[in-house]
Length: 332
Image (spheres, rainbow, N blue to C red):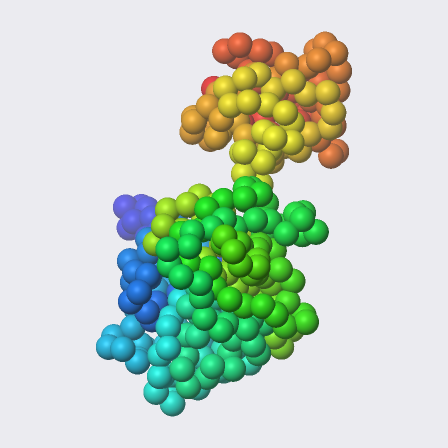
C-alpha cells in the first residue's frame, strides 16, 4: 500500500509537470531583438519583456547583440510567434540575415521600434517592404513635440487606452510618405515643420506589421507607450486585448473608488477587471459596490446570465444565476 501511494504521488506530480509544460508551450512566444546602443534597448527591452511575461502571460526571449554587427544566436526565430525588432544599422552575417528573412517571409507578424526602420544595413529595403515606412532622417533633438491619435483611426484596438495626445521622448522621425497600404495611427509634430507619421500598421506576406518611431528611453517610461505596444502585440498575434480598468471606468462613467451605478447591460469580464483594479484588491476578494438604479429586482443582462440581486456595503455577493466567472469577483 505504501508503494502504491508513492507511485500515485509520483504519477500525479509528473502529470502536473506535463500539464504545466504544455500550457507554457501554448503561450505565444515573442522574440525581442536589441541591436543598437543609442537608446539603451539592451536595458529597456529585457525590462519590457519581463513585464509582458508577468502581466500578460507571454513567453519572451530577449536577444542582445554581441559586438556591433551580430547576435549571439538567432535560432529562437524558428520558434517565434512574433518578433519585436529594435536595432540600428547592423551589417548582419549572411547566416543571421538569412534567418531574419526566413522569419519575415513566413508571414508571421513583426513589430518595429524606432531605429528598426534602418535596423539592417545590408537589407535597407526592410523599411519600405516590410514596415511600410520611408525613413529619411529626423528633426533636431532639441525640437520636442507631441504624438497625437489620427482622428479617423481612434477606434483601432491598438489605440485602446492610449491618450489622444502625449509627449514624445525623442526626436521626430521623417517618414512621409508611407507605403500605400500603411495605415497611420499616430502622427507627430514639432514647431515649424509639417506633421509626420509616428505609428502605423502594414502587412507583408499577409502578416500583421506594426511600427512606431517611438522607443526613446523616456518613451519606455510613458504608460501610453507601454499601452500602445502591448495593444500592438495583441493585435499582431490576433489576440483581442483586454480593456484596461481605465477604459471600463470611462465606459460606465465611474470614478475610482466610487460605487458603480448600472442602468444598462454590462460585461462580466469587464466588471471583474474594473473591480480588481479600482480598489486594488486581489482577484476573488471584495471588489466594489454595485448599486442598481431601479432597485434590487432589476435584472441586468450578462449575455445568457443575469444579476437579480446584489447586496451593497461589506457583503457584496452576486446571485448564483450570474455564473462562476462573475460570482468569483464578489466572494469575500
